[in-house]
Image 1 (tube, rainbow, N blue to C red):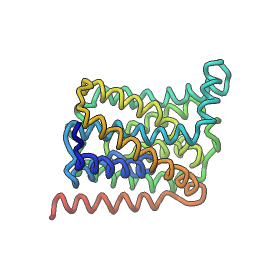
Image 2: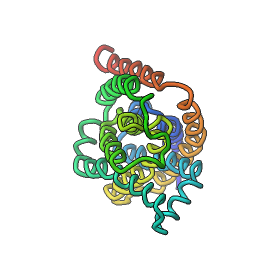
Image 3: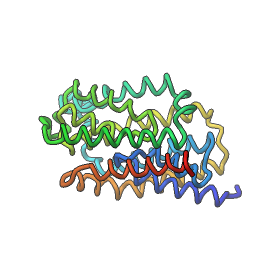
Image 4: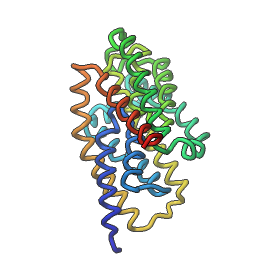
Length: 271
Protein backbone atom coordinates (compact mmCIF):
# COMPACT_ATOMS: atom_id res chain seq x y z
CA UNK A 1 0.00 0.00 0.00
CA UNK A 2 1.37 3.40 -1.04
CA UNK A 3 0.20 6.01 1.42
CA UNK A 4 -1.37 9.20 0.12
CA UNK A 5 0.34 11.67 2.46
CA UNK A 6 -1.75 14.63 1.30
CA UNK A 7 -4.94 12.69 2.05
CA UNK A 8 -3.60 11.71 5.48
CA UNK A 9 -2.68 15.34 6.26
CA UNK A 10 -6.22 16.38 5.34
CA UNK A 11 -7.54 13.60 7.59
CA UNK A 12 -5.48 14.94 10.51
CA UNK A 13 -6.77 18.48 9.94
CA UNK A 14 -10.40 17.37 9.75
CA UNK A 15 -9.89 15.04 12.73
CA UNK A 16 -8.66 17.95 14.84
CA UNK A 17 -11.67 20.02 13.77
CA UNK A 18 -14.02 17.16 14.67
CA UNK A 19 -12.42 16.57 18.06
CA UNK A 20 -12.69 20.24 18.97
CA UNK A 21 -16.21 20.88 17.68
CA UNK A 22 -18.17 17.63 18.25
CA UNK A 23 -19.36 18.50 21.75
CA UNK A 24 -19.25 22.28 21.50
CA UNK A 25 -22.52 23.93 20.36
CA UNK A 26 -21.00 25.14 17.09
CA UNK A 27 -21.61 22.15 14.76
CA UNK A 28 -18.84 19.68 14.01
CA UNK A 29 -20.40 18.64 10.70
CA UNK A 30 -20.77 22.25 9.62
CA UNK A 31 -17.13 23.01 10.43
CA UNK A 32 -15.91 19.86 8.67
CA UNK A 33 -17.87 20.83 5.54
CA UNK A 34 -16.40 24.34 5.60
CA UNK A 35 -12.84 23.13 6.26
CA UNK A 36 -13.27 20.33 3.72
CA UNK A 37 -14.20 22.85 1.04
CA UNK A 38 -11.23 25.03 2.01
CA UNK A 39 -8.67 22.18 1.77
CA UNK A 40 -10.46 20.48 -1.14
CA UNK A 41 -11.52 17.44 0.87
CA UNK A 42 -14.88 16.74 -0.73
CA UNK A 43 -16.88 13.96 -2.35
CA UNK A 44 -18.46 10.68 -1.25
CA UNK A 45 -15.46 9.46 0.75
CA UNK A 46 -15.12 12.82 2.51
CA UNK A 47 -18.80 12.68 3.50
CA UNK A 48 -18.32 9.15 4.86
CA UNK A 49 -15.09 10.17 6.61
CA UNK A 50 -16.79 13.11 8.35
CA UNK A 51 -19.42 10.78 9.82
CA UNK A 52 -17.18 7.84 10.74
CA UNK A 53 -14.53 9.88 12.59
CA UNK A 54 -17.23 11.22 14.88
CA UNK A 55 -17.01 7.80 16.52
CA UNK A 56 -13.54 8.81 17.69
CA UNK A 57 -15.02 11.73 19.57
CA UNK A 58 -17.79 9.48 20.90
CA UNK A 59 -15.16 7.05 22.20
CA UNK A 60 -13.80 9.94 24.26
CA UNK A 61 -17.19 10.16 26.00
CA UNK A 62 -17.15 6.41 26.64
CA UNK A 63 -13.69 6.69 28.22
CA UNK A 64 -14.45 9.78 30.31
CA UNK A 65 -17.83 8.50 31.52
CA UNK A 66 -16.99 4.79 31.50
CA UNK A 67 -17.92 4.16 35.14
CA UNK A 68 -21.39 5.64 34.71
CA UNK A 69 -21.99 4.02 31.32
CA UNK A 70 -20.90 0.58 32.54
CA UNK A 71 -22.90 0.69 35.78
CA UNK A 72 -26.03 1.86 33.94
CA UNK A 73 -25.65 -0.88 31.31
CA UNK A 74 -25.26 -3.52 34.02
CA UNK A 75 -28.34 -2.09 35.71
CA UNK A 76 -30.25 -2.14 32.41
CA UNK A 77 -29.54 -5.82 31.73
CA UNK A 78 -30.28 -6.70 35.36
CA UNK A 79 -33.60 -4.85 34.94
CA UNK A 80 -32.73 -2.44 37.74
CA UNK A 81 -34.85 0.70 37.84
CA UNK A 82 -32.04 3.26 37.51
CA UNK A 83 -30.33 1.54 34.59
CA UNK A 84 -33.62 0.83 32.80
CA UNK A 85 -34.72 4.44 33.16
CA UNK A 86 -31.41 5.85 31.93
CA UNK A 87 -31.16 3.78 28.74
CA UNK A 88 -34.89 3.93 28.02
CA UNK A 89 -34.54 7.71 28.02
CA UNK A 90 -31.58 7.50 25.65
CA UNK A 91 -33.43 5.16 23.27
CA UNK A 92 -36.57 7.31 23.26
CA UNK A 93 -34.52 10.44 22.58
CA UNK A 94 -32.62 8.66 19.80
CA UNK A 95 -35.67 7.59 17.78
CA UNK A 96 -36.98 10.89 16.25
CA UNK A 97 -33.72 11.90 14.55
CA UNK A 98 -32.99 8.30 13.54
CA UNK A 99 -36.33 8.01 11.73
CA UNK A 100 -36.07 11.38 9.99
CA UNK A 101 -32.42 10.77 9.17
CA UNK A 102 -33.17 7.52 7.35
CA UNK A 103 -36.17 9.00 5.53
CA UNK A 104 -34.47 12.16 4.32
CA UNK A 105 -30.74 11.29 4.26
CA UNK A 106 -30.35 11.63 0.50
CA UNK A 107 -32.17 14.97 0.35
CA UNK A 108 -30.14 16.31 3.26
CA UNK A 109 -26.87 15.28 1.56
CA UNK A 110 -28.01 16.83 -1.71
CA UNK A 111 -29.39 20.14 -0.42
CA UNK A 112 -27.66 20.99 2.85
CA UNK A 113 -24.06 19.70 2.71
CA UNK A 114 -22.50 22.90 1.37
CA UNK A 115 -21.15 26.11 2.95
CA UNK A 116 -24.16 28.42 2.40
CA UNK A 117 -26.78 26.19 4.11
CA UNK A 118 -24.25 25.60 6.91
CA UNK A 119 -23.75 29.36 7.36
CA UNK A 120 -27.50 29.96 7.54
CA UNK A 121 -27.85 27.18 10.13
CA UNK A 122 -25.01 28.65 12.20
CA UNK A 123 -26.79 32.02 12.30
CA UNK A 124 -30.27 30.60 12.97
CA UNK A 125 -28.89 28.34 15.72
CA UNK A 126 -27.01 31.24 17.31
CA UNK A 127 -30.16 33.36 17.54
CA UNK A 128 -32.07 30.42 19.03
CA UNK A 129 -29.31 29.80 21.59
CA UNK A 130 -29.35 33.40 22.78
CA UNK A 131 -33.15 33.53 23.12
CA UNK A 132 -33.55 30.10 24.74
CA UNK A 133 -30.62 30.50 27.15
CA UNK A 134 -31.90 33.89 28.33
CA UNK A 135 -35.40 32.51 28.84
CA UNK A 136 -34.82 29.03 30.27
CA UNK A 137 -31.26 28.39 31.52
CA UNK A 138 -31.78 29.42 35.15
CA UNK A 139 -35.33 28.03 35.47
CA UNK A 140 -34.40 24.35 35.66
CA UNK A 141 -36.25 21.75 37.72
CA UNK A 142 -34.02 18.77 36.84
CA UNK A 143 -30.44 19.29 38.08
CA UNK A 144 -29.09 15.79 37.37
CA UNK A 145 -29.08 13.60 34.26
CA UNK A 146 -30.43 10.62 36.26
CA UNK A 147 -33.60 12.57 37.10
CA UNK A 148 -34.71 13.09 33.48
CA UNK A 149 -38.14 11.64 32.72
CA UNK A 150 -39.45 10.04 29.53
CA UNK A 151 -41.34 13.13 28.38
CA UNK A 152 -38.24 15.30 28.71
CA UNK A 153 -36.15 12.71 26.86
CA UNK A 154 -38.60 12.59 23.94
CA UNK A 155 -38.70 16.38 23.63
CA UNK A 156 -34.90 16.53 23.63
CA UNK A 157 -34.92 13.86 20.92
CA UNK A 158 -37.26 16.01 18.84
CA UNK A 159 -34.87 18.93 19.23
CA UNK A 160 -32.03 16.69 18.06
CA UNK A 161 -33.82 16.54 14.69
CA UNK A 162 -32.70 20.14 14.13
CA UNK A 163 -29.14 18.82 13.90
CA UNK A 164 -29.99 17.02 10.66
CA UNK A 165 -29.41 20.46 9.15
CA UNK A 166 -25.58 20.73 9.10
CA UNK A 167 -24.55 23.82 11.01
CA UNK A 168 -27.30 23.65 13.62
CA UNK A 169 -25.18 21.44 15.92
CA UNK A 170 -26.38 18.29 17.63
CA UNK A 171 -24.91 19.52 20.92
CA UNK A 172 -26.59 22.93 20.67
CA UNK A 173 -29.94 21.42 19.64
CA UNK A 174 -30.07 18.92 22.49
CA UNK A 175 -28.84 21.39 25.11
CA UNK A 176 -31.51 23.88 23.98
CA UNK A 177 -34.07 21.09 24.20
CA UNK A 178 -32.81 20.32 27.69
CA UNK A 179 -33.18 23.93 28.79
CA UNK A 180 -36.73 24.16 27.48
CA UNK A 181 -37.73 20.92 29.22
CA UNK A 182 -36.30 22.07 32.56
CA UNK A 183 -32.82 20.54 32.72
CA UNK A 184 -29.83 22.27 34.26
CA UNK A 185 -27.07 23.15 31.80
CA UNK A 186 -24.76 20.39 33.04
CA UNK A 187 -27.55 17.79 32.97
CA UNK A 188 -28.51 18.88 29.44
CA UNK A 189 -24.89 18.70 28.27
CA UNK A 190 -24.27 15.27 29.82
CA UNK A 191 -27.51 13.88 28.37
CA UNK A 192 -26.38 15.27 25.01
CA UNK A 193 -23.07 13.41 25.39
CA UNK A 194 -24.76 10.10 26.21
CA UNK A 195 -27.34 10.54 23.43
CA UNK A 196 -24.45 10.97 20.99
CA UNK A 197 -23.40 7.34 21.54
CA UNK A 198 -26.32 5.57 19.78
CA UNK A 199 -26.87 8.51 17.42
CA UNK A 200 -23.37 8.48 15.96
CA UNK A 201 -23.07 4.69 15.97
CA UNK A 202 -26.33 4.56 14.02
CA UNK A 203 -25.25 7.28 11.58
CA UNK A 204 -21.91 5.57 10.99
CA UNK A 205 -23.45 2.13 10.44
CA UNK A 206 -25.98 3.60 8.00
CA UNK A 207 -23.27 5.46 6.06
CA UNK A 208 -21.04 2.38 5.88
CA UNK A 209 -23.92 0.27 4.58
CA UNK A 210 -24.66 2.88 1.91
CA UNK A 211 -21.00 2.86 0.87
CA UNK A 212 -21.17 -0.92 0.39
CA UNK A 213 -17.94 -1.22 2.40
CA UNK A 214 -16.02 -0.74 -0.87
CA UNK A 215 -13.10 1.19 0.58
CA UNK A 216 -9.49 1.09 -0.58
CA UNK A 217 -6.69 0.32 1.86
CA UNK A 218 -5.64 3.98 1.67
CA UNK A 219 -9.16 5.10 2.58
CA UNK A 220 -9.34 2.65 5.50
CA UNK A 221 -6.00 3.91 6.83
CA UNK A 222 -7.20 7.50 6.44
CA UNK A 223 -10.34 6.70 8.44
CA UNK A 224 -8.24 5.18 11.21
CA UNK A 225 -5.98 8.26 11.38
CA UNK A 226 -8.97 10.61 11.54
CA UNK A 227 -10.61 8.44 14.19
CA UNK A 228 -7.55 8.47 16.46
CA UNK A 229 -6.96 12.21 16.08
CA UNK A 230 -10.59 13.10 16.82
CA UNK A 231 -10.56 10.81 19.88
CA UNK A 232 -7.43 12.36 21.40
CA UNK A 233 -8.57 15.94 20.82
CA UNK A 234 -12.09 15.27 22.13
CA UNK A 235 -10.67 13.80 25.35
CA UNK A 236 -9.25 17.21 26.17
CA UNK A 237 -12.18 19.31 24.95
CA UNK A 238 -15.05 17.52 26.74
CA UNK A 239 -13.61 17.95 30.22
CA UNK A 240 -12.85 21.63 29.58
CA UNK A 241 -16.34 22.21 28.16
CA UNK A 242 -18.14 20.82 31.21
CA UNK A 243 -15.94 22.94 33.46
CA UNK A 244 -16.82 26.01 31.39
CA UNK A 245 -20.58 25.32 31.47
CA UNK A 246 -20.60 25.15 35.27
CA UNK A 247 -19.43 28.76 35.49
CA UNK A 248 -20.24 30.66 32.31
CA UNK A 249 -23.05 31.16 29.75
CA UNK A 250 -23.00 29.80 26.21
CA UNK A 251 -23.44 33.20 24.56
CA UNK A 252 -19.78 33.20 23.53
CA UNK A 253 -20.51 30.23 21.26
CA UNK A 254 -23.55 32.00 19.81
CA UNK A 255 -21.43 35.06 19.02
CA UNK A 256 -18.82 32.83 17.38
CA UNK A 257 -21.53 31.13 15.28
CA UNK A 258 -22.88 34.50 14.14
CA UNK A 259 -19.40 35.68 13.20
CA UNK A 260 -18.52 32.53 11.22
CA UNK A 261 -21.93 32.41 9.52
CA UNK A 262 -21.70 36.03 8.37
CA UNK A 263 -18.12 35.57 7.13
CA UNK A 264 -19.09 32.50 5.08
CA UNK A 265 -22.10 34.24 3.54
CA UNK A 266 -19.95 37.27 2.74
CA UNK A 267 -17.43 35.09 0.91
CA UNK A 268 -20.21 33.21 -0.88
CA UNK A 269 -22.11 36.23 -2.18
CA UNK A 270 -19.78 39.24 -2.21
CA UNK A 271 -16.21 38.03 -2.69
